[in-house]
Length: 215
Image (tube, rainbow, N blue to C red; front, side, top):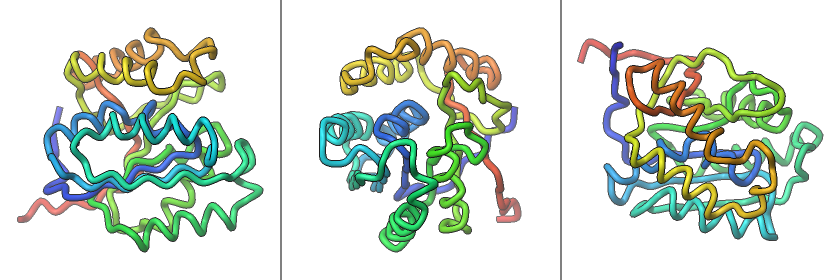
């Protein structure tokens, strides 16, 4: 297993179609990064859920998932499940994020995610952030769209447990969902850990990488 770093990380960006997407897909990675790099700048954009309970959940959750970070979160009010129909507004939000930050790493949905909101956002990211390292996170769902990732972030057992605890603690509006439980989150992390010789891991799709091996 080859392990490549991303070089110096001073700022990252994370985007989600819905409140909790970022935490579910990359919460363990955020914990790992922020604990290792106090003061890391994190620009986060969520397209739906603004102005209500969901935004409040997201605000407290991402603060917990980004300990010690310079977190800057924007939650918009686009309608859930209708992002493709509100393409211009979503595109403008992504472009505004691009003007606000030049991240060393961007965490986003996968371009082949079966959910139309996730997929639409992912497609916008690839056009606005053309020269950036973009890692597409995965979210287990009814559609059965989990694929074969090609990038992994190992998680310590403590970090994996912290991720599950924070998901349960900060998103009470989601606890009624039959898939939203400890077994789902730790089970997927255990499988991805097996694939990268770790106990637990989060997995990502890196659609394009530019190597600089000569330095």
